[in-house]
Length: 557
Image 1 (tube, rainbow, N blue to C red):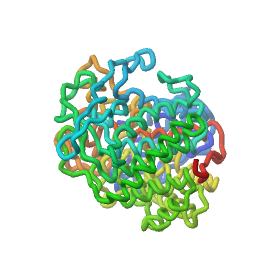
Image 2: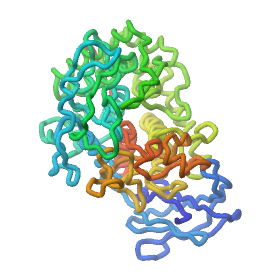
Image 3: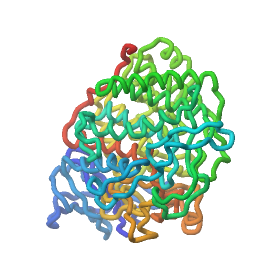
Image 4: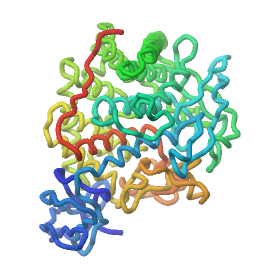
């Protein structure tokens, strides 16, 4: 293994360019940057950083940011080690942006995945019987059509709270990142006059609408009665499927993303936008009348629990999106009355499916509500301070160095906060923070591994999945290019991680093994974080400037 960790995809010509050297040396060492032909194009001395807490390694930083020469095959040499090759240039991240979003078509339920659109990944439609699913114990005495949507992760369940935060982040990217309205994703719907990203998101939004029960509450999830083995392709799944009970969290997820979707789809399909807004209003009212319906933590058979017994953040988030879409005073009042509106919501990680207050704050950042803009900038400054102190430039430092499940997405979501501060201020230190923070995901880490399939010299390719299961069955594919791995997880909840990683520190709590579902799963929400950040990097590879597509509260339709 090389002792110099770099972004194995590459560095933008006008952006920061740093690498991390692992060495026993205490004093500074000479380094050289060579181009693809082996010619020295830059040189200097390393900056000793001491022992990195997240890895236990003694490390130095190599800064070659002054080199703006474009090309491929660059390497850095220092301390007797040479890095993996990488590129320097402008348009490096466009393919990653596209692939991170193309991932979702392969996750679709209830539709054939066409081989001509995804060579190597074609398969028959899975779970066509989801159009007539009964309620499980305690969930009701009716049946619902809940076809469609995305398979959540490595299993074949469909979960409203994880689908909700995924839809929100993809739509937030559509509003705030340039070029996504023109991006072609090679979908069955491509060319229908609607941007492909919205075509893809609608596949999940339609499912979320179908999960709304009579009366306005929303079922928390639906999945198999029992866990299925690896591998099991969706169309071969023999298990009966059941609706789980409604929950306040799921209901507020629908309220938030249906309101957001109404705002964005109005330009393309006014009738659909009106349907979304009606569902959002109904859900918000139903949640208000039923504020403490929680998904049970013990519901772990056949699917994950996604339990959450603090929904103050979901109420805040739903009110924020309804306010942005309608401009109505009652939703503004709900935002201002939330105890989270003035709270510090930018913790060790900014947001995920169970913590949505920061998502609300980011959505509100471009309004005139007092204090919101300043709070986002303060959160971004905190993440930049963490990044500056981190020898691998990671804007994530969990308490006790206990890395979280899905840490890759948490790193990226912290960068989303930093990117939003750039959008608000135009201050290039925020842009540079995002670009350098992205290096960790793409190889500048203690494992010298890109956590994105197909990107870099050495990359994760055996993520936990029931159908991208090449490690078990060579006739099946690896995950598609652009798939993010969950990343280091100090909890080591699965048997493979426990057997092979026990006693390891922070960054080393990861293994690229299909059976390590706690460190190496794929998930729709994690890929949304990747897509958002890749879109920012692609945007700034092609041109500089502040995004001008920020939403403002509009009048009610």
